[in-house]
Length: 205
Ligand code: OGA
Ligand code: MN
Image (cartoon, rainbow, N blue to C red; front, side, top):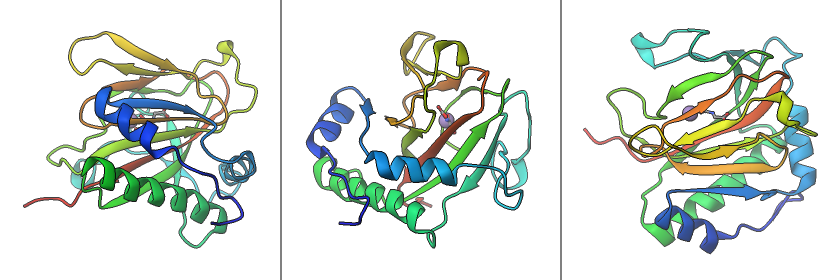
């Protein structure tokens, strides 16, 4: 286990994903790792972060009205990013063993929403694909206040009911089934920092 190591409550996560389809965890990672992740989630180096885009390949485009964050993919060469990826790898292996999900890999990026930015209601499934199975978001905002906005709304699989409102507080993580839950990020009134990621299965055909 790395210097950042923290244990994963696998049976709790697997059980709730199976029964409910999503879970909100408080402080699943060590505080020390979270503090290092926050230091990595800074866009002072213009080389690292770029505007997030919607869609993939030919359909990819930037539409501020839909999605207003800047992102930076985690770097497998960086030891802090490695520690986060290692925790997710342990989760991947554990969930495959418990739920036979066939999760094949994991991709994730830091995201910073500036004041006024949000992300309109969407599903984390790219058009024409079904390879994103499980979404994760880990929040890095210290002393987040209600007035700061930026909540994640999770909608019921069908209809318009909001089934969870998640404050993007430091140390909170949500994990949810990508294909089941439309979701939306309300406009933030402060810079809002997070790591968004997806476990994927191998694409068929
Ligand atoms: C995403 C997303 C939610 C959040 O990046 O796809 O929905 O709370 N993020 O940041
Ligand atoms: Mn999303």
